[in-house]
Length: 180
Image 1 (cartoon, rainbow, N blue to C red):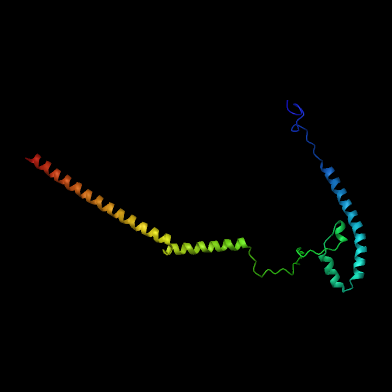
Image 2: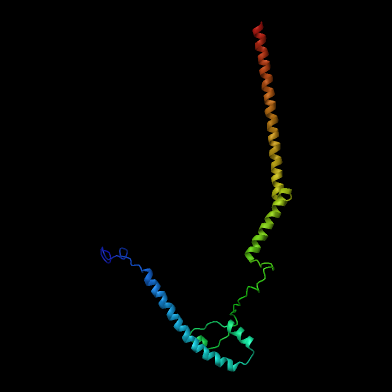
């Protein structure tokens, strides 16, 4: 007998669903917990910012730029200053800074696709003009086929004329025999 017996399988269990009210309650509790954590971090961050401002004297505009560029640090990361040369800080652009007039930079795949289409168009132009090797071979094959068809048509005509002459001679012979 398989493990668990007939009724011990996992597939026949009754499914339980969470109600929308429970989900809302969980979401509210999560939001409140996050607010409390942020307030606690805000108090700790304010103490750290005061220490940082005392160490680095400078103008107010530089401080505001530094604050925007710094990201939130979790755990021990805020205590230890590490500079990673491979990490690129993402800079956000303002709507006024975005230039719509400058040409869009294409990706490598897009450029390759455009080049491929242009090359195909150039090849088709040359092919239609009969300048490619394949076009020359096609035209030569076409000329041979036309010649063969003309020869076949000529032979058919000759056979038709030949059979008509033979039929005409036979008819004349029959006519002459009948008239005697």
